[in-house]
Amino acid sequence: MKRARILALVLSLFGVQLGWFIAPAYACGCGAMVPQASQRIAVASEQSVVRWDGRTEQIVMRLTVTGDAEDAAWIMPVPHRATVRLGDPALFDQLGKAIAPVHRTRHYFWPQNGDWPFDSSDSSDTAAGAPAGAGSGVGVVDRQRLGPFDVARLTATDPAALDGWLREHGFAFPPRLRGALQPYVDRHWEYVAVRLAPQAAHTPLHGALDPLHLTFAGDRPVYPMRLSRLASLPQSLGLYVLAAHRMEPRTAIGGSAPQVLYAGRLAKPSGALGELAGGTPYLTALTQSFPYPDRISGDHELRRAATDTPVQQVIYDDELLKVAGIPAWLLTAGVVLFLNGCVALVVVRRSRRSGTSAPQITPSAPLG
Image (cartoon, rainbow, N blue to C red; front, top):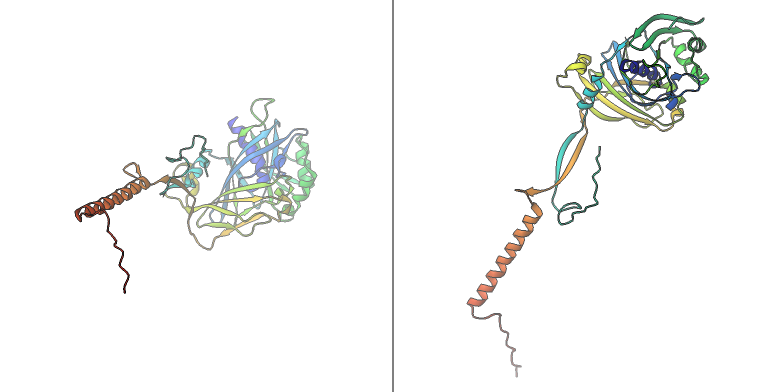
């Protein structure tokens, strides 16, 4: 079941395309994961990381899927011939820890709701916070079995040929997707097609899938987003990029302005992240939303940012300022009251020594 999930991941990868981002797919929006007729499948979340060293691009993607589909197919365009293997699920746990916000304490002086004497029993805390040969027009470069995944690397002269390949294997190819593939056919891109079925018969594909790892040549990193314009619902995009320097998208391609969640050099990473990051030590984490997917104008191209300025999210934990466990405001108020008392005592004592409790004022007699 674990490895079956990988293939589902790859299948959805087409919807998010080339894998730097976290986003939903066909039944949920992207248009690249194709289930059997009358069945549905959706990508609840998608995690992906891209490594680019100036010559080669690697994509590792993991999807979490929902729906009632018992098998599905996915196809992703790539600019050059790709190799495919299973990825390491631990990679994403390590990435999550690498970009985790840092916590810093921020003190305040005066008591607030929840502090004595303003304790509130109803206050609540709120956390802030990736076959066989087909008919005419399709060439099968390679076919391999990866756990439950049947992976084919294809060439195609037109989208209709890809349609025929899918139909030959029992899948309906959405007509709108056929037209969306035309720009990739015109640019002579190749395709990674994957078929996934769970290990247990008559069991819907569900939950987190194992990652798939794609590698292909690339003199510039590109993330195909064009198919996401077929989505009927708003799309969200999440991206990890490993490179020699901080990276950024060239344009917003019809979405909101991309936001940087993290940017910085990794300090001696180990395990799966260390293996992938070798030679590309700078990690950039981006997020972007597409409220209107039909406005997506093309594919994301990444470029080196103007500077390697680091970015780190900070979560401030507000605490009442205390001294030796006592609220500073209470100590201050106590000191002020004590000093005022001392001043009053001094005034009283001086008055008693002079023999009068208060100065006497005698009216003057009128002149003349």
